[in-house]
Amino acid sequence: MNTMSITDRAPFLLIDAGNSRIKWALAQADGTQTHTGAFAHNDTASAAGWASLPPPRSAWISNVAGQAAADHINRLMDAHWPTLPRTTIHAQAQQCGVRNGYAQPDALGSDRWASLIGARAAFPGEALLIATFGTATTLETLHADGTFAGGLIAPGWALMMRSLGENTVQLPTIDAPLTDHAHPPAWHAFAATQTHSAIATGCTLAQAGLIERVWNDWQQEGKTPARLVISGGYARGVMPYLNVPCTWRESLVLAGLAVIASTSDPLGKG
Image (tube, rainbow, N blue to C red; front, top):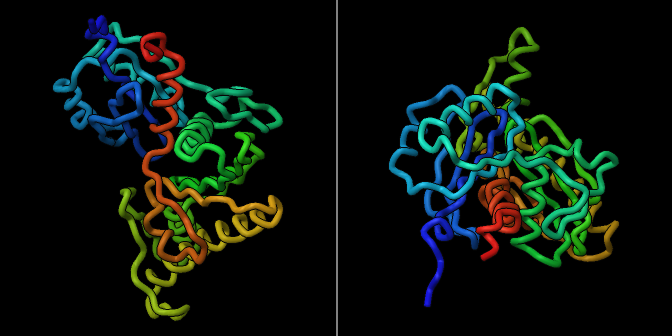
């Protein structure tokens, strides 16, 4: 006899509030995403589609965009599910098979922490370099035993391009749209023949060069193969320029939130 209630079968609402936009998903306890979407921080129309979603059992949130974003998300949830239990995650010393090697574990961004957990769940027992391309480009080194050894943060591809225009007199400001399929203009060798391409290509190769350098150093230090996992809104723009093997993984933050939710919510364990 199946005693699982409707609440037991309800999905989790997962929310990744980044600096540029808010991504969300409804996911079952096994991590399967049934509905997904994204909207800007000042956008309420896109989130209005939540009215047609099946009611979630609880909400799990990673927010690196500050209190204004938190208030906005709470207002949206209150409009649809005012009694919905909600948890905003923070990095911990250890969780879901990942041990936090940061000197001050809770200082690690919640998005980076969720990404580590999502990558660990996707590739258990492997040494990983996780490169996420968003407003910032972040790299995380994860040992095969689940120990997070530390990482790097650099300006993202679009931020690099925009800063050139904002801080020089003659260069244009390029404000690239943030989409999962954003990519720079095509280029031939190193000879860009117009300024926009020169900026886009230079910033793209700067991103690729950083990843390749860290990946090669990580391989040599570990003396064992490591998998390069690529994610983030600008990832597809950089991937074609990488000279090292990589694995694309969409929405690592949401994947990590699903793991945290399923192991933390009492209903998710049933």
